[in-house]
Length: 123
Image 1 (cartoon, helix red, strand yellow):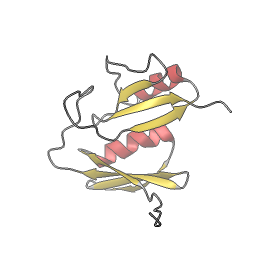
Image 2 (image 1 turned 60 degrees about the horizontal axis):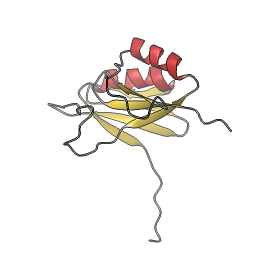
Image 3 (image 1 turned 135 degrees about the horizontal axis):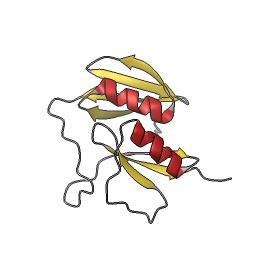
């Protein structure tokens, strides 16, 4: 393959784009660059995440051993315990099932989408 693409942004399905963007604004500290009922976006670090309204959105089950794998976000944090505490206070929940033997933590965002908080690599 000779053509290489550049990632423009990531778009996530959502039942509430404004709330979804506001949550990840708190998690990542990125600026909310667009906010309407049908679509919202946050931007930072040269990339963006969009949140598009999907009528009758159904959040994925966690863990879902029978369904197809969906995308999820992994974010680096300096302190797993502190990040978990703050993200739960912002509206995330911590499901009982946690893979990875404590090396990372799976949380569920307020819309029902799983995301992982991971220790920032030490260089």
